[in-house]
Image 1: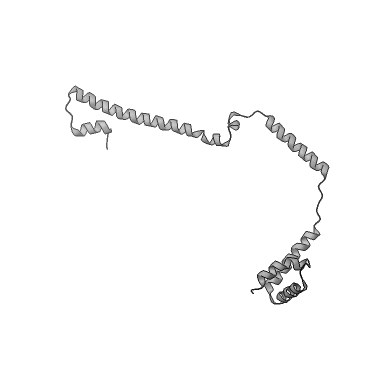
Image 2: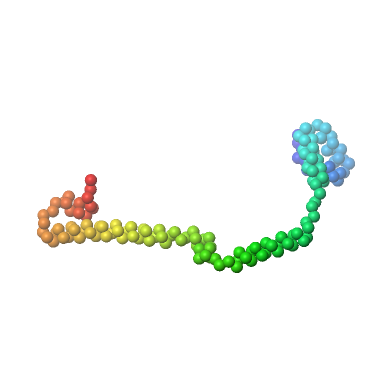
Length: 148
């Protein structure tokens, strides 16, 4: 029904008896015809009764103050403990500790690969200086390493 959105806006005020007589009659007439809005009213009444039944518990001031002081003491004792080197670095720093390690490993890998290429080139130069006959395949094998 097209009146349902308006009725749903009025239901809370209808329960609290804060609407005009004309709106009250409009709501009651609609509730007699519309099953969905009637269910909505029942749900709102159920929630309202649940809230009114429960009494607000008052906070014991002494208990609150004692708990607050205990939490402050706990926080101070944690702050008084010496921090490890990693704990003092912060979360961001701990995440970046592996980065230098990875860079060092990459550097060593590149050095090893580069030195292997240099050894192959020096072997080729040594063979050429000796004047030993060399085929194109043998030269490629020395430069590129053994190929299967």
